[in-house]
Image: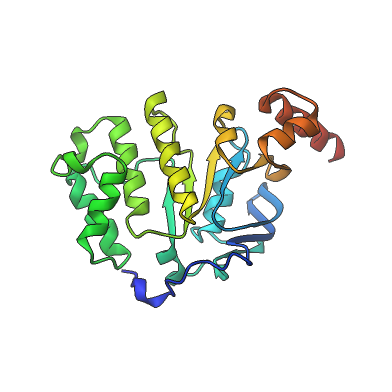
Length: 254
């Protein structure tokens, strides 16, 4: 169990990057999943990792959260080199799958994750469930929930300890358009309050909801900028065409 007192609860220094990757490489045998990724991400913004399935987005998030170790390079979150177990108390991570327990109630799941992060304040659990619209379903068994409701609960469990950095791996996959809009509303509220959010997606129409985008292909960041800036640089009217343009240039340079 992680104790939230083991790591400073001070707000991230706006003058320092909330997240830093330096030459990150990850190999699985002969396969190179990440190939020298380097960037700094300032606090209090939403960053979109966009790329097709298999481009390295999930591997990158797992390295940044310390869930796996890099073959080479380094990952730093809130000034702490990862992996670092104590620093996980300041990081939220919503995985692609619903990492919740179907035999427990909604409230029991949120309470379990709160306890894992050393959170003893019941109000934080209630706030997380209220934020995702599940306060009125707190006594329901998770196995009886719809897929969208389970995604909401997964988000609540990632937020229950009020982390200053939040990683979301394909958070809107399989959810209906209305719920997708609600999720992005939550993300914007959190970012406006100072949370640094990294969202991976292969859905290009979500990209303009991010403050900044990183196009990822074949384990590399092939372009970075705002949605409008990347479209202008690529000379295209949509982000999908812009991505293909940058991807083609990246392959030509390889």
